[in-house]
Amino acid sequence: MLEQINQSVKFIEQKTNIKPEIGIILGTGLGGLVSQIDIETELFYGDIPNFPISTVEGHQGKLIFGYLSGKPVMAMQGRFHFYEGYPIQQVAFPVRVMKFFGVKNLIVSNASGGVNPDFEIGDLMIINDHINLIPNVLIGKHYEEFGARFPDMSHAYNKDIINKAKDIASKNGIAVREGVYCGVTGPTLETPAEYKYFRIIGADAVGMSTVPEVIVANQMGMQCFAISIITDLGVPGKIVKVTHEDVQNAAANSEPKMTRIIKELVAEL
Image (cartoon, rainbow, N blue to C red; front, side):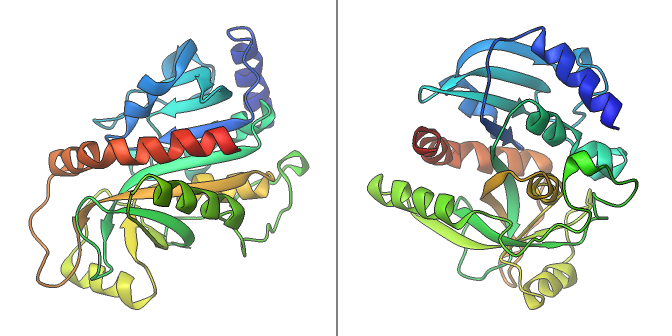
């Protein structure tokens, strides 16, 4: 894997002069933040050596370099999921490339289902912790260049960045929730019993991404911030049949608020 990462980095270095310290991963229906980036370079995943390719509707499949709020950034317009059939290590491969490229801060967004009974569709939830029910991304051969074999995860989501984001939301009159994200494999949406289980074990929201990337980022010494748009509800009495299109539409409706928070957050990092 180390050789593959170096090949990817070398290819990217030949395509851009941007030296980003901030990486951004944009999830389902959340690619609109790209319109706020002063883009210098766009690379399709399929053109980058060793990169997976996004296969999910709503994920554009581009690696973007440019400036957001005056800061150089590296943004993934579309991500990869374990349910697409990729080995779990491949799902977070781009995060390792980001680190080798110089990224120090990682911002992650996703669409998720709310299991906290206080949540409503369209809410924004800042993630302050997670529960991992996806095969662990660090299983397998270890490379010293990646960091600790047994990385500490007691502060997986940086508290200082969380507080900055909450202040930004407050100043802009944007209501935000805060809670625990449960990462699952998918691709089925959850049964009522599964929603109940996730709530019992301490989750506020559930989704099929984010956790592998955050684990890898923490292992490699990056500071993480993650935010979810609640696109459906797994709360007794509020559970209805949901399609992927419904999730995309709900994410798109709340995206402007998330974009405002991330844009101003980048300015302060």
